[in-house]
Structure formats: C-alpha cells, structure tokens
Length: 265
Image 1 (tube, helix red, strand yellow):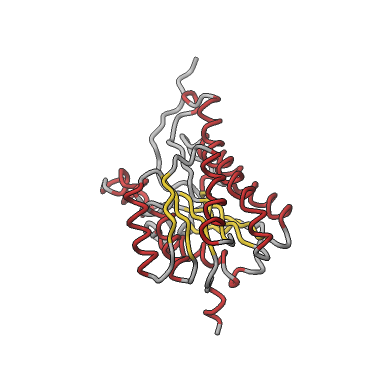
Image 2: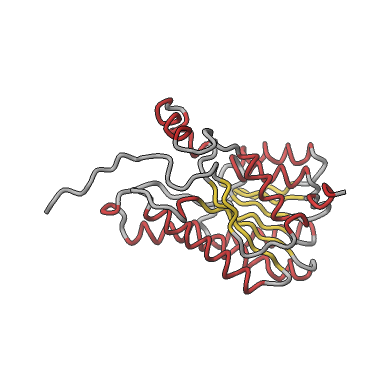
C-alpha cells in the first residue's frame, strides 16, 4: 500500500519549538504515523499539552523544557532521545525566528543572534544526532526555513539572511551526510500560528496577506506537518538536499511593513 510509505512506525523523532504551531503539529503528525517523540520548547505547559496528543495517538513523548538558544541544551536533545528510546531516526529543526527590523537598526550583534538561533541551533542538533542515526541505520533531518530566505522585502534582512543560510546549510549537510542520512528543508510562507497572531488578528493585515498570496489564504500548521512527515518517511526516501516551498505560491513577500525610503543625506 502506498500509504505505508508515509508511516514512521517505531521510529524516534526530536522536534524543536514543539510547544505550539508548526512544531506541535509536526510532533503530533509523527506520532500519528508511528513515532515516539522528544519535544522541546521554553514553556512546559505547552509541551505537556502536545505530549497528551502524542500519547493519545498511542506513542510515547519525552518533554524537555529548554531555552533552545542554549546550544548545549539543543545538543542534549539527541542524548535525551537515545537515553529514553535507545535510538534516533528523525530530527525536525523547527526552532527559530527573528523580529523584523530596518537595516539601520540591524546591528552586527542582532544579525549574529539571528544566525545563532536559526542556523547554529539546527547545525548543533543535526551534528549531535549523527552518531545515533548511523547506529539506527540512517535517518532524516528536516529544517524549517522560510520564503524570506529566497525573496526580498524591507525589514527582513536578519531573518531572511539567516533563513537563506539555513537553506544552504541543508544542501551542504545533505552532501556531507549522504547516503545514510537525508537532509531537507521546508520553506514556509504565512502560516496561522501564534507567531502571526498580531497580523491575523488585524482584519486589514490579514486581508493583505490573503490578497497577496496566489492561493488567497494563510497556510495551516498541519500542512507543514504533512510535508515534514513526507520528507521524514520512506515516501520521501529519494529526496535529499532539497528545499520544498510550501508557501501558497508566493513569489514575493505578502506583507508590506510600511518602512519608508531613507531620507537624503
């Protein structure tokens, strides 16, 4: 049966940023497809709710509350998986994000922080997972990047540059880790998560997002989760080093931050 290829039965996954939104939806999707899951984010109460859904699907969950800007904590998630479940097969690098900021307000340290949170965290967990994945016979890594890693828009210099770096990190690490470990990414458009609450709660801004998206709607976290499951499972077994664009057809940013031209000097 073709649907069997989408199963990850008895696999073990680590999902970062798993308390809400895309991370939570992906952790639950992996559990529904047969995986035990280590979930991590800052807020323990959010993680406990996700763990309840995982357990309701008949799988086991390990909750690891952590500040995932701490690379030691990030690397420790691979150890948590092997200590709890004896193996590690799937890594979903979902933690990340950076607030929009005009270029003249984007300091070198702000840019470095964006790289640290979006790129170094993904590299750290992937690197920590390699040994366990090889012992398990191989594995799959899925990085969550963004449309802003490939299009230009005012205010997104730090975020877009970091996400572009994550996309190319995906390609380069896929080359290094082939053939045993596959590495892919999902370039996400506007998705209805808590990170977008300020925008979608404003009717005018929400309508702008929808109007400027070819599919005329905002994406759902479960649509990203389904793509992550595809890439992590045998259904995506002949894919590595690729960035799948799941963005409603966007070819440009769908939100204008209203940043003015620079005044003449």
